[in-house]
Image (cartoon, rainbow, N blue to C red; front, side, top):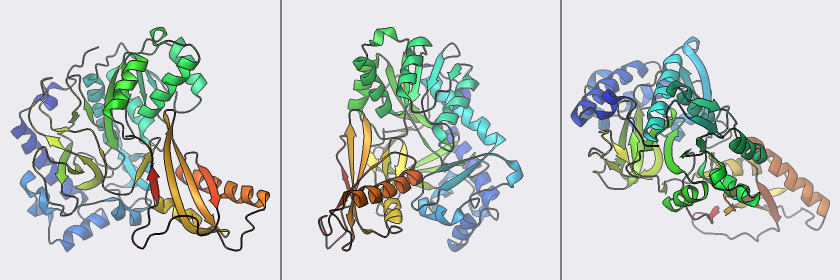
Length: 435
């Protein structure tokens, strides 16, 4: 397979024309949300800005940033810029507390999303003649349904397997002979290892392309996936706050990811000052989803670390390109495609009676899957030598954390005052993964 350009006009227009279009859509988006989305209206008034002040892309930096903290008070529908009667779908992503970040989609948003995914798939060489095995989770997580609708717009056949049940995944991969695999990169490696253990060689599969995202992964992991599965691996990027997967993807010409620049305005800013950084410098990635109708976000700071490049690509696309995400500037972990914050764990522990809010999160990659283990100190009055009490308490904590996060965890109870203390900021996370 070799990538091709799905939308010639949008993906190959001169960069100055892209800037003009972004400016027009930015001004329109600000007008649409002002007075309708309370927290945006408040932030703009506090900054002394009205929609009339935003006329071109040059005015973007006059607008205030948005980040996950701004969305805490928006639960459940405070981000909507249109009446609920215009919303056809709702997705959620993990927040910094027990509440989720809720985003709404109009019919126009769903169509836009499918268009962006179709462009991404075309860049990866996927055509209407392919069969796409989607092993992202379906439901409130944007991965499964996002890829699904985009693949159907492309005209390809979709196998909506969803996540989990590895044995069934492998049976479908061998029996149905899909040509494209879409899942998290760690799960792709796990599938490859499980197939090898079963004596299934990659030559027995029809896979040619992989579309992987939802978690950080290194170029080294990419090479491993390509070798073990005999495919070409592509990195797809996106998050619910912008639209979902489909914001960008790398083409066949290299590892930089093409941003759908006519719909998403990208910036790189200094994590300390918030000032925009020039081309090629690393900083926090900020997006404005100016075409989105249901829940538009202006200058949303993803806290992902990347670089931007503005020169045309040898593939023929002129869209802005971003470097593969190298990490995050905040404390969020991404484990098996799910956003995990230490404060979420703390929120659960503070509700328990037998433990202290002294804990550590230990993250490892066992085989090819991320594993989270939570170490928690019990209270001074806890009878630590009673095995049954330990098991029951650990089980209750594990159940509550898994219900909140939607992923499996291990819980280990430890004696009081055994976890390290710090006079400064506590070291809550030990991430042993080699990303």
